[in-house]
Length: 413
Image (tube, rainbow, N blue to C red; front, side, top):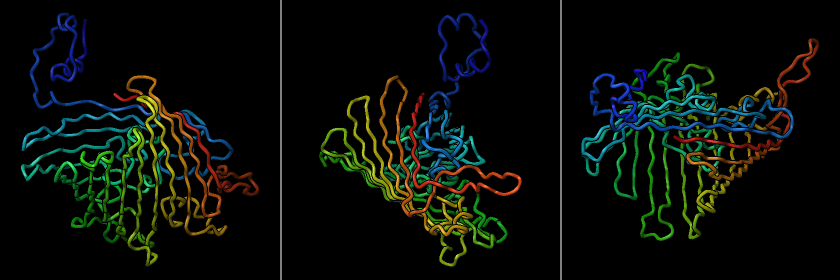
């Protein structure tokens, strides 16, 4: 039996093993141990969904992350993620790395033009106090209650808080664990909003001395706190050049992002509460010099693990932002012509039932309701169309509510 060189190469470095019969049938080249790769692990997932949106007209979907009209009323491959990692060991001078790829529509939305590369960094530890860890390269954003990996979240769809958060940074991140209860992270990145270098200079040139600062403080309740043990409180502030320009387009304005989140255990087995507050402000808004303004989101979470396989998750949230901001910027023409308020407000309720039918598989059924809280229609409408004589449909939103029912299947490996 012949085997390809890729299979033999993986076997040689210890990433895969061959059955005794295969090894005898094709001895191949002499294996050369590569100890630097033997501790590498491969993991990832495949995320798929089926979505139904009752009603007609999907031209203006609710503007939370990964919710596009291309996903509505159909079957979807949302994302594929593959991660290679050599974790930090216990030594004082430990080292490791992460190489992670993410593809599919969600990967493209989260990573932009840099998709499918998601994370690639060197992990290092220095013998300072309890051990000071560093990541140098591209790494996931620190702030937020939810993750880019939907299987880590209580719900399949993302919150508006996640929507206004950055996803990736390129820079240097330091992590120090003061104790089992207190961990601090501080980093310096090229830019706050994307993984590009900042373009804060006149004419879109980079100012190399100007970087973004990111931070997160994590507090965890100790075992001595009884039923509250494991509860967490998180607070972080990011500040630096973002992706919003002044109205003249000559330079990018600075952005401030503040996040506070909490997870609270309860005396009822399996019942957990959560809360998250995100707010983003562009520094130049007061002078009407920013192409984006501000956005804020407040969300509450309730999770109940009824059995080892069955979990119920609920999320309620309120989000609002300025007209040029993250939520409804695509409807600016409609605002100007029809006088919609300059601040858009949305209420959303998400209910998710999760049940494990198969090993390594997450299966969820989700219902979501998004409601316009400022009295203006935000959702629906058909695409722009023209009959050759007059425009009869501008594609403007027509509904105050958007409903969604989705089935989500994720395989983890």
